[in-house]
Image 1 (cartoon, rainbow, N blue to C red):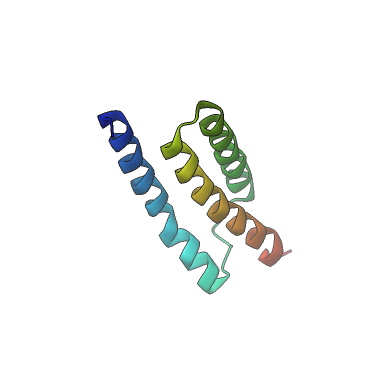
Image 2: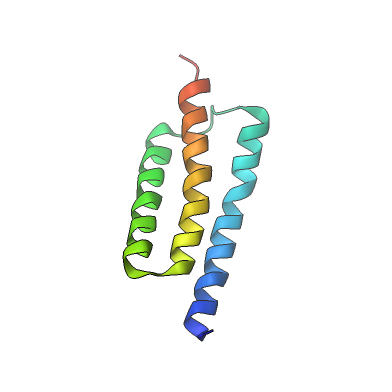
Length: 86
């Protein structure tokens, strides 16, 4: 495996893993008060675009990391929409 791919996978693992504690906390508590709807909407769309970009380039570290992150971010966004206080 080329060094560039190893670096890509390492970056993908670290950035995706850093997102997991927030997702787990939100899943467990359903507390979405501190989550910005605008930020998560933009973030989720951005991750979806990175996923599309990775697919177009056949860049598997980008695809894998963004597929996982998209699932987590979209779940949090759905919970924000579902559990927010009006």
